[in-house]
Structures are given as C-alpha cells and as structure tokens.
Image (cartoon, rainbow, N blue to C red; front, side, top):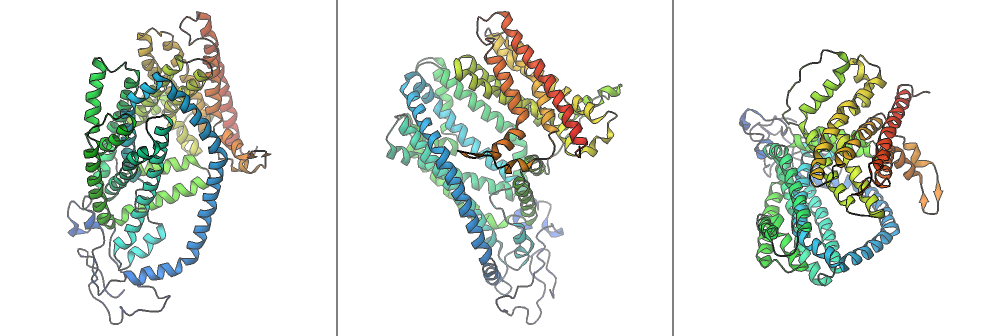
Length: 615
C-alpha cells in the first residue's frame, strides 16, 4: 500500500504509479485499508444505527478491483468447490436414504391415523375451529425465529477467510454479500415450498379440498413468509437498534405465541357456531387475519379448508406487494452490513459448527447464548447475603436467577405447557394417556432444568468451584436446592387451575415431580466429556448400526430415566382417575422419592469419576 485511506470516504488518499496494472492469473490485488470495522470521528453519533456509515464506500472505476478479485477467487476455489459438491452429494444421499427407509413407514402410518381422525366429526370440527389460530401462531413463530437467528447468524453468513481477505480489497461489497443473502432466501423458499406441499397434502388427506386447489392456495404462504422472514432477519443483522429491539421484545413475543396457543386450545374446546365464546373468537380471528402478513398468508389456506375467508384475494395481493417491496429493499441493502458484525457471526457459526461435529451440544449452546446476549444490558439486582455459609450456594443460585429473569420466565412457560398437556392426558385412556403424559413430563423436565444453569456452569470447568467452602459433591447437591424449591412453587401455581375444577390431587402430584427433575438436571450437568467413542461400537443389527442409539441413550439417560419412571408411576397407579382411592397416591409418592434418591446417588458416583478420570 502506498497511500492511506480516508476515514470518511473509504477511498485511498493517493495511488502510486503502476499500482493498477493487472498481473497474471495468480496476481492478487493489494489490500486497501478501507477501515470498515471501527467508526471514525466522522461517522457521527449514530454510526451503529447507520450501516452505510460503517460499510465500505463505493469505489470509483479507477480503483475498483472487483472483477479481478472475484475471478482470482473462482480460479482458486475450483478444486475446493468440487470437493464440497461431492461432500454435499454424499450427505444428501444419506439423508434421502434415511428419509425413504424410516420416513416412508412413519408417513404411511401418519396418513392412516390422520384419515381416521378426519372421519370423526367431532375431531375434524375442533381442528377446523383451531386452524386459524394455529396458522397465525406458525407464521408469527417463523418471524420470531428469524429475528432471533439474526442475532447470532443471520441470512448473510460469510466465511471467515472471505472476511479476512476479499472484503479488505477495493471491491464492491454487494458483489460479495448479495450472493450469500440470495442463497439463504433461496434455501428458505425451498423449505417453505416443501411445507406448502405438505400442508396441501394434509388438506387433501382430511378431505377439505382437492390436491390441486389446496396446493395453489398454500403456495402464497409457503413462498412469501420465508422471504419476509429473510428480509426481517437482514434488517436485524444490519442495524444494532433493531437487534436491541429484538432482545427487548422477545419476552413479549413469546407471551404472544403462548396466547395464540391458548386461543387455539380455546377454539378447539368451544362448542358449536352459536354462543358468546364463538363471537369473541370470531372477532379475535378477524383482527389477527387482517393485522399483517402473518394473517394475510393464512387466509388462502382457510379458504381452501373451510371457505370462511371471503377477502382472501385482497389479502393475497397485499401479501405479494409487501413481500416484493421487502425483498427488493433487503437485496439492495445486503451489501451494507458492517464488517465487525459479519466477523462476530462468522466466528460464532464456526464455533457452533466445530463443536457440533464433535457432538458437544453444550458448547454450541453456550456460543449461541453468548452471541444472543451480546450488547444486552444486564441487571445487578442482589439479595441480602446469608449469615450462614451453608446457604451461600443457594443464595448465589437465587441471585443468578434474579439477574437472568428470562430463565425463570422460560421455566414458567415450559411448566405451563406441561400442565396444559397433562390436562389432555387426564382426559385420555390407555396407551394414549401414557404417551401424552410422557410429553407433559418432558416439558416439565425442560422447565425445571432451566433453573439449574449454575450447576452446569460449575461442572463445565471444575476450577470455577474453587470459591466454594464445600467439596464438589456437596456443591452439586446444594445446586439442586433452588431448582427444587422454585420448581415446586411453579408446579403448584400450575396446579391451581386443576384444583379449581375439582382436581385437588394435582396440588400434590405436580409438585411431586420437581425434586426428581432437579436431581436429573444436576446429574446431566456432571455427565462429563462427551463419549463419542460410543458412536463407533460396531453394533450391527438388521436395521443398521445401533451405536448412534447407544450414544443418544448415554447422553439422554437422566432425562429418559426420569420421564419413564414418573410416567409409569403416575400413569399406571390410577392416581389420575377421578374416583381413585387415596391409596393410589402412595405409588407416585414412592416413585418420586426413590427416583430422587437414585439420581442423587448416581450424581455422587459421577462426581467421583469426574474428579478422578484416570480411575
């Protein structure tokens, strides 16, 4: 480099003689200091909210090296591109083989089961009443997922080598960043089209309409919603102010999704077309269907299923216009994403990819959580310090939850979802009750498990426990106190609606599940390093190598053991029956107590192995 770059314009201050001469095939354009990463004095106070102020300015034809740089990259990447295509072909073949081998049988059984359910008039009517809320829920969930994904990855994901060299050249950024955005939108659109095809097939299997009209009316949602989600994610990736709003509004968006799920359940449980409940639901559904793209995309599907969406042509036209405008604007601004944000997302994505290949799911979760919390303002709330050192672990755990209220809210939502699912299990019989009850217990396990994050952090690095006056085993036991206490409180609150409607036993049975859930979460925290050698045991079966299932069982052993034991203790004891005698409660109580003791004993053994891996 012969000249420095102007901080305000991004153009080189001067150019030496012969610098613009083109070399041979291997000649590489010299990098120019465009200073894209740090806001200079001339960027202004709003540099974080103005991506253009942080991106490279457009280069004049005299200094532009876009054509030479891209041609050199294509030549050098030809061999790598061929190897990558072969790897992708092998991966696609394996996925297709698994899909055909296992998915065909499952799909056939699902189609048969769906046909039987559609033949039941009561079930089909309940599903039709809940369909508007369910579809709006899915559309809004896609928007929330895309916005949250943009906080750590985003639709423009550039490999780290491209960030290290090509973006430092005098090249137009849009020529490098737009292909990444267009690839993401293409993949999302393909996924949306496949979902639209699946939705059309479901409408055909339920007898709502023919396959052709159903496919035509499902296609606007399958094409437009992914494109809108990609455009939204790009704006979140571009602007720091949008990212802040996403972090701030995420809890409210989750509550909105929960409200939509409750509306769907309310619609399914409501009676016939008459009545005050149906009138209120119709008002809500009308407001939702015309409130934005999430409702416009739903109206053609509702017209295909029931014909109760008279304004669907107008809604489809509005959806198409808004989608076109959003995609055009996103495509034009794809090249203005600040380089520092691209580097942060590339580093996070590389970390997640590397640890996923080694099946370190915990490390991947921590990397994503760190990126999601980047720039978020934390709270410094405190609790009065305890006078006894025996309470210091519980005090620290309580302070940690107080400073991360999202974890407590998430646990409450998981437990509420589990309670709602348990209400469905009570109304069923036989095997269906056991299956739904297992799902409800799994949701409760996820809820209580969110409260044991401090135990996982201490087990990730044993040096972190050096502050504790207790031995590591006692420390892990004490980390189960706060999850147990808060789990009992949350499950008791979730059981109050059951008690109001005559299910007083829920006040005992639901809090009874919190102690084994907390013990299982602590046991999972001290699981130790991932044993990837279990995936290559060579256990040949007629259905293939079963080593992967052995590894999955080892990884999910605390979860599977707890859910299976509690399902057997609650589902087969008769305690869920309305007229069951008080003696029926003895078996669930003994199951929970013995399971908690067994999990704590397993935790103690696992801690000894964790501290002495050589033994």
